[in-house]
Figure 1 (cartoon, rainbow over the protein chains, first blue to last red):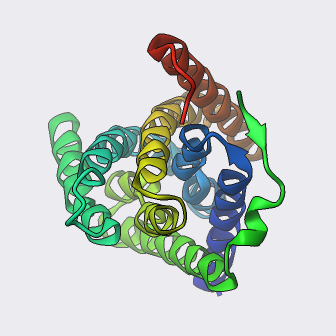
Figure 2: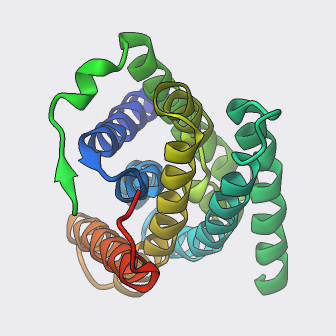
Figure 3: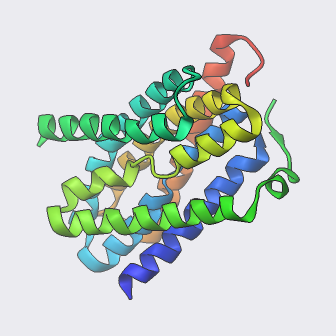
Length: 111
Length: 130
């Protein structure tokens, strides 16, 4: 039941922010909503209830490291989108590994 | 400079919204599973995972071209710095205030920081934003 709730709430909030991203112009401003804390809001709300504040604090700190990785992901994606031979879904999808590498490296450095 | 186009969502197809819903829901579940399996410090990383960006950028590139998709990616980079403000509020206030207040203020901090950084970037570039 918890997982269904996570899926539905997460999908709804991500969709809501994506909708905001559609209605705002210019696109560089709308792109802010692509980095909205949609998953975080749902996950942390559930974590507060299930695991308590210390768990949430640890997640918040780790999220900061993930955010740095997300910033690098965005910059790399901008570069990949310049390559006409690389489909956007492939370039942006493969760059998930870049995000993961930067996030894990940051986590390993501070733990 | 910042404009609202309420007709824009009507140009997207229903399955494009379905993709975002499914991706968003799936990543929220995955973040929870990772946290459960590997602890909150690894699970917390995934709260900033670029879950829907490949789908969003692909759809944008096909509708409006790669330049617009790149502008969107640039915006996401700026927005991710706003996530640092969100995370900071959570870390420094979660022990002292109710969850609803913490998350509301954190969300506001993300928005204010992201918009401020975007405005600063536009001012620095000195050109009409794309």
